[in-house]
Length: 168
Image 1 (tube, rainbow, N blue to C red):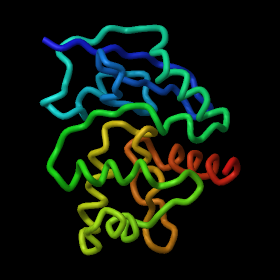
Image 2: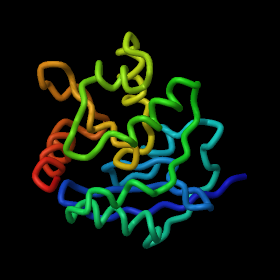
Image 3: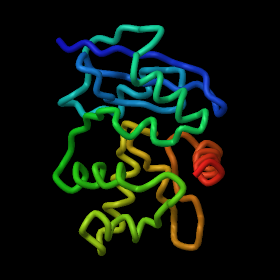
Image 4: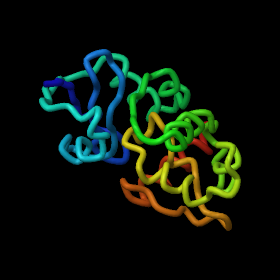
């Protein structure tokens, strides 16, 4: 049995919840007040069997508050743990290198991940990302400027991109 902790906090764009392993690594996160929505997206190999609510998750909660106040790099050093195939693992690592305020197209992201023809694979990495914000899949959009998809809604994605452009 594995236990993880979760906490929800208010942000300018709604409630944000994070599910964190005992060692502090983010397993799942997003703009919801329901930790169950996050658990479903966590890899079965990492999915906790028990969730314990905490008022605050220490560094994780502080980084979320700081990010939403304009300290865009506050999320960068928070550990994240996700599991999948080799390409998705690598693509999630690459997503963490895309600077705030400098979004990329899916084509650019695929090239950054070393597989320029894997545009659908790049989009899949964004869609399967369980650790929103900490693995900033919101920084990837379609050619021509269309937002593409975002699990937490296009209004949230637009707010994040505008926030990063204004602060960065």
